[in-house]
Image (tube, rainbow, N blue to C red; front, side, top):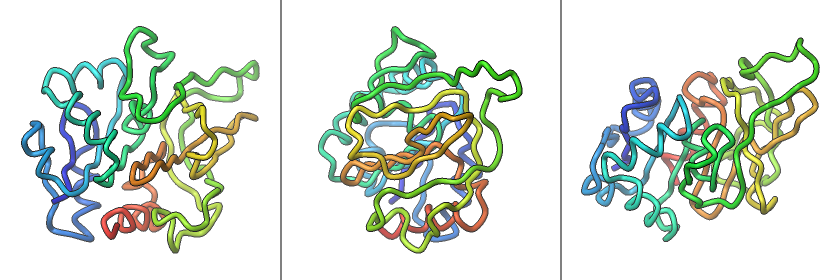
Length: 205
């Protein structure tokens, strides 16, 4: 069963529908017992870093999820904010600790050029750094995906960077991979065929 975590934030319906194109065994869950029963886990997300952590804790999901991620046995896909909470902390809410699964931090875009809009919104390309990754199998390097975000991940260990994207002269990790733990900053369910292929690859893991 692929568990899509419901913590009161995130576009659950569209992500779930996209996953259901490849398997009927998708379930929206919001408790630790169902999380433990899952074979794969998806954490979609929109909104603020601190609110996400708060809601996960409110539902008693934060610690169980952190433990599962530390074991690195169940495939996990964090989408947008779901990628960001994999990190240790974020400038958005500096006093809130993330899951800490991946070493590094999340920072806000900052540009002197006022023509560079924040949030970074729309289509942008991703350069894949790991050609043998199962998540990007049969997806063309440099494919365009749909982004909506004001914060981006700065990884401590560059080896976990699966894909890079550039915006306003800033190049950041738009995809991460650490064992069976994956995170993507873009929205695959809004990214047409390339995005759907990413989700299919995750389902096939």
